[in-house]
Amino acid sequence: MSEPVVRASENVYVVRDRVVAVVPVSSTISRRIRASNQVGGKIVNLTYGKECSSIIFMDSGHVLLLADSAADVKKRIWG
Picture: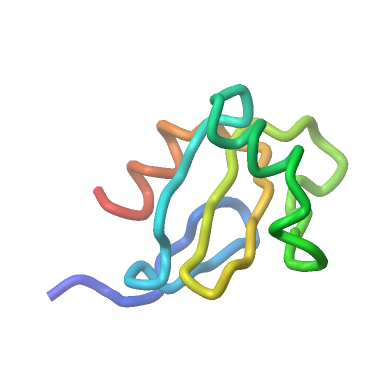
């Protein structure tokens, strides 16, 4: 059985079962979410000063902004 907590990026660990989606920052879905006010104060910037490349949507409503590409993040989370 695989580990429930996985490393999504440098210094960023998430619970695999709580991740809803990983999308590139340029996708239509991510632009619509960022444009709307639905997220509120649940955006967590984890880019550490780098340019944002991917977004993780959690089942709690939190949105995690990461500097790594969406393909790399998906590979780390789901293999």
